[in-house]
Length: 229
Image (cartoon, rainbow, N blue to C red; front, side):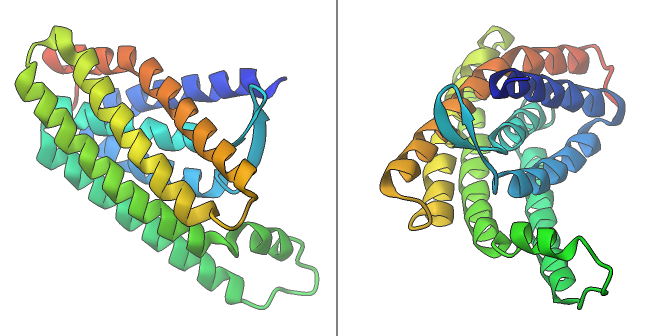
């Protein structure tokens, strides 16, 4: 199966999963998703892949999906609830990083086979985490602010697509620049670095455009009071 097909499949799985946790668990379900997405993306971003003929980091789909969760919270529950979800995701990333760094300090048993693989993935996690935390806070808080701004200007539900995309696309741009610069500047050659930056943002733009119908579904469920309080 090609990377491109897998990319589309992963995006679909993420969007459907977000709707499922929101439909059955409400806002707390999205809080849990934001932690899961942040941690998963921090692991997957270590892997680079060739997709659509360009080099990109894996993990941008899962991470980009957290903006859908934030926008659902902003739309249906308000900016304060969305910021609470961001704070929970932030704490999740910090705890995960500390826990994995402590795990690497343990002396492995003679018959252990996992330590070298864990070390290869998580030994560079501190730099990835710093990049992720800074980019996460900057982009997510901007997304909540921008979404509220556009909602005040265009409060009608028919403009939901506008406030979703205008807030997310700018926030994704900020996220891509901050994260890529901190995480990979000096790690890859200039050509690969710029390619990763470009493809990361372009792929996130596609995810942002694709998630709009799912936001409409979440809004419709909220209007019909199908979401647990």
